[in-house]
Length: 466
Image (tube, rainbow, N blue to C red):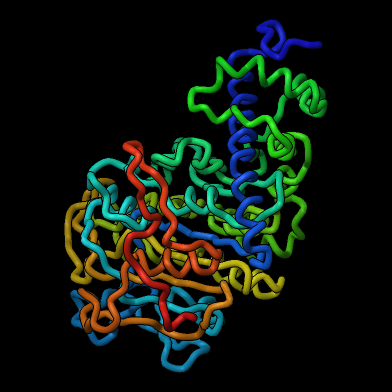
């Protein structure tokens, strides 16, 4: 039998690539076992899933979902509101495609929490817990996606339960998506890079030619992975040896994931409708992964992919401090791509009949200051307007999931500084998402000290959406 560990056949780098697939397969063996146990007690649960569009840096609510036309000029900014398809729901002029389908989503305009730093806010929002340490992006509690990946009550074998699309130079901790005490088996499968580029591929699925024939021989594969066990397994996840392990290997021996990642299989008109930049193709890829069985697809939208304007007055992500960018010029450049991608995804989910089973959540870690500030830009070297971090109130969009749409839940005050009606927390969003997924928030997991930790200590499903 060929020796997979032979240095003459496989370089160390190639072995590590194969090893990442091995870890993924064995992690899925545990997931499949848990799914089978819960499916036996609740066989009627729908095949539901979540797409999270994560706007790292924080979405400025006043430039998008919560314009303030009657506020003084130092608050309201450059843009005026436009009417939407739903009477009474107005959006920024930068979101005309959102406005045309406002009956297919709801806006949450009264979200709030107490963490003004990117790191603490990432952890606060993405885990649904108060972080032990507000600094640093490494989770001390598992992210919601990791919990979903472990607790899904159903789902076919051979899929990627939790994926995260983000730029190529990042890792699982860059956006506080770590699995903490759940173990590395439940970290997201990272979909790195820009899927709008012609040469884009997913490194962890690019199985090498000399390895592929042996991966398709399951009996050989079991022996080869046993040989790799001591060198690759540092977490104890390679202890599965029953039929669930066999199912997990279907990740390596079937084309399910590979087809999902192949955007060339989409009709060109569909790809164009989403937009051919990173935002659009990331959103399209999320839909394809959900169709392939993913339970939680995270999409980190940062740079829109178009050339930086000559004035260099824009920023990489959504963090619109004056030192980073001219907030209004950045919005004029960035938001139209966001408008196209999100509205295309919503329309596509509805047109494909996926709107009941797929819940879409669009948000960032906080909003930005209602009052405009002025500083010299790092790149422009001139004084320009910006908005700083503001967790006091911010907005999110939710669509699908069989929820009520065409409404606004909560409101901010006249200046967009704080909740005016119906304050909401990130926990309420996740309570709603867990309900959609059929996951009880009473469930607990032991932390590293063995103490049972509830997956969501606080928060209630948002009743107006139900």
